[in-house]
Length: 349
Image (tube, rainbow, N blue to C red; front, top):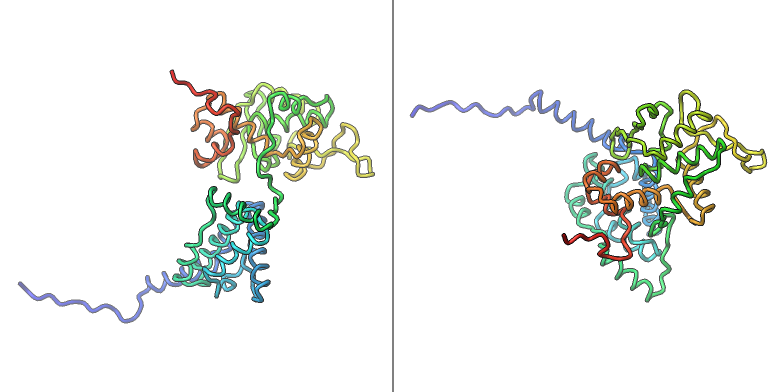
């Protein structure tokens, strides 16, 4: 056996290693920016509110804090004990358990970014990941205990249960008067009730997204980064044809705002050239819901109705998942309303 000379390892870093370290440094500096550039405005707004409450909790404990949403160095010194204390503090303040869980997820998500950016060490981050939210059973026990100790539970802006819509009420929401405003509202409610679109997806629609000859709508779902085509239901196609014939410009945003009398009240049935945001559409749905006795109706309630109707008419779960723009089959099941008779529709052959 011949002896072979062993080449010693270089003591100086080679070009590849140096380039790798430089790339790591650049990626670390841009970790927060890259993450936030990929998120929708509504998601960022919610996350910023979550992190602002986290900062409020720390300030209440006498600690000085930085910008958790933008600055990796703000996370230096954040420990798993502080994060776990944040969860307990929220419960003491009366926040809903579901809100506590969401805020914990936000804090842990940004802690992961801080780890990548060098603002948090690996050991502390590993401990932060062990801080868990509350399961459904645990949340019930927590609320029972808070009732015993008379801690008021905040309901928050989000409803604990959706407004239930029956088929007659859905028809009433779609049956709007033959005015520019009414034709707009009819198409809006069709897209929400018969296609299950999210309000942000509806707000982003352009005139050119509709092919009335083919009877289709092609639109973008920013939440799941998908472009999909829906065949319009007969009522939706009819509503679209009426709105396009009388009220829609040739291009641009689909929605036109209601005209005002100048005193803050809407002029009867007329529209302006101004577009509508998702908040404006949400307010309109709430107004139309009140008119048919559905107090507190939101666009998201209509998505629950659509999923429930589809499921009860034997739509396979994979088709419901795809049509609703969900990434997993578990999500549409959360939208299906529980039947009053638990075994209704169960077929034993």
